[in-house]
Image (cartoon, rainbow, N blue to C red; front, side):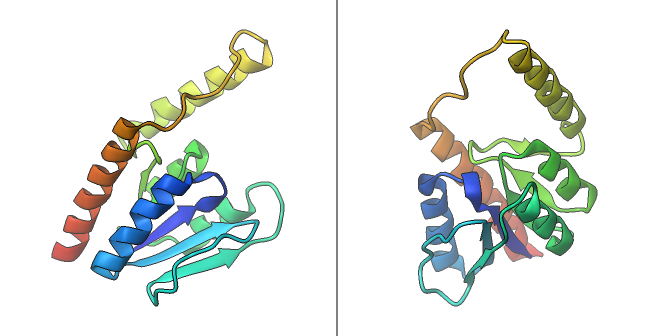
Length: 150
């Protein structure tokens, strides 16, 4: 089991949590982005730069993810594809995407996009806070514990 990170939009604070977990556990981790990102020089952490383009990193993650792998992403369609392939997905805010909630999350995403396009909703999500980081770290720890048992 390994961790895949949709790193283009993954906050540095979350990448730091992931790097500490990889250092502590040795879990294999691959970050994908369309621009260079610094990663610690650990044998279990890999960086793969993908070409610019719509959903290129997402497509690469979907092609590589295996059952039981964890994908860190804010992209709900990517999370849906991962869950469909038997992987697990979590947002940088610690929200787990599951078979039980992914359809409603996709529907909400589409509704919000429609409202934004109509000018009814402006602005973006709140800044990543301490509670978000803690929720993510807890979700990651639960996944790591299951990975160790498997």
